[in-house]
Image (cartoon, rainbow, N blue to C red; front, side):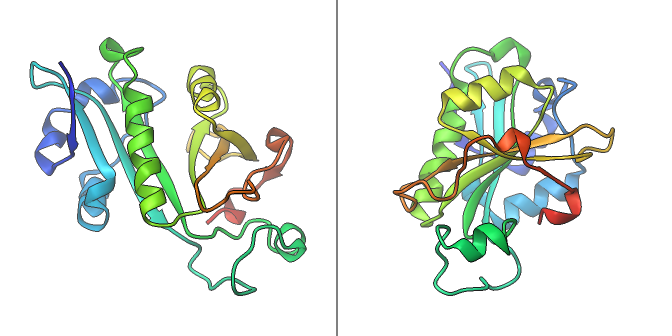
Length: 195
C-alpha cells in the first residue's frame, strides 16, 4: 500500500523513476532544497510499499511581488480585468507534479493535488494554479476532471519553445469563481507578462 508523506532531501536520491517522463521538468538540487526550506509542508511524495517514490509534488503559496493596485484585492473589479489582467493575488501554485509511469492511474496525482488545494485553503489562497505543456493532453484532461480550467496560454514558455497553459482551480475564498474565466486557451500572453 502506498502512503502520502512529506518530501525530504533524501528523496532526491530516489525519485528518478518519476523524472524519466519526457514531459517532466527536472531542476537542479538547489531548486528542490529551496522548496524544502521555504514551503516544506507543500512538498509531498507518495511512497510505495517497496520504499520507491511513486509520485511527488512541489508547491508554494505566493502573490505578485508588487502590492495589489487596489486594496482590498477583488478579482471582480474591472480595473483588474482591464488594466492589471496578469496581477497574481495570494494563491497556491503547483510547481511540479509527476507520477512514475509504473504508478499511473492509481489516483496519485489527484491525491497530491488535493493535499495542495487543502493547504491553499488553510492559507486563505484565492486559487491553485499550475503550468502544463499544451501538448500534454493526458495531464490537461486529468486537471480538467479535477476542476481546473485554462486561464491563459503562455507562448514560448518552456526552454524548447513549447507553450504552456496556466490552469486554475478556485478555492473556498473565491466563492463566486472570479479568478477563473472561460476560453482561456484563446488568451495568449508573453512569458514576460507572467510573474
